[in-house]
Length: 227
Image 1 (cartoon, rainbow, N blue to C red):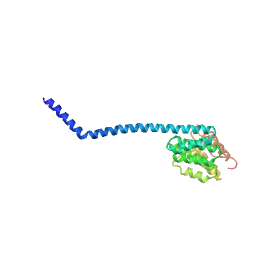
Image 2: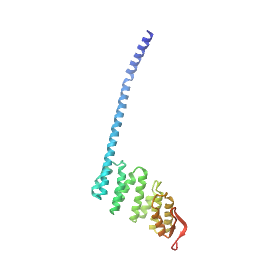
Image 3: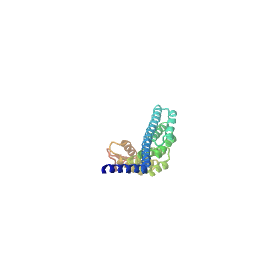
Image 4: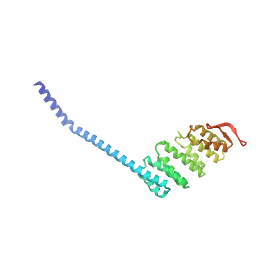
């Protein structure tokens, strides 16, 4: 009998607790299921956006490969306006910049590189865009703009050799031969084995009368041509 009473008492306590807390529990369940449903919907939306951005990128790439720039531009503009946070958009900017340069449209290439430099993720893409933009500005004869791009870079980690080479090109364009040699040597020293155009740097040094070694850098104090 005592056991029945205890069971009855426990049941009454449960009922009382449900009366007092039932609405909060139901609301919690509703919120939990709502959040779960919302997360699933968000995932589906994100997947759809990625697929759309990928499609725009692939179409743009095919047009560029076919050298149909006019047809590629609308897809590029859609990527920038509708998918600004997509990883495909900065890659499209880099691709568009390359195509513009090949077409001799330097300023349009610079515009695409600026977009990539300001919006790309991860950081490495921003550095690549900055490096290429510095080269474009240098090719346009704007050594100050090229230098500013290098000096204002938040980071050049992983691209030390490329930055040093561009500094060498800037110094050379300004007639600062010794500084150019120093920068080219720094670029050679920063190059990892099998990475980068070591032969081109060697040619640049030799054009300045400096003998480069067999691939690990330039020999200090060795020169030709009255240097």
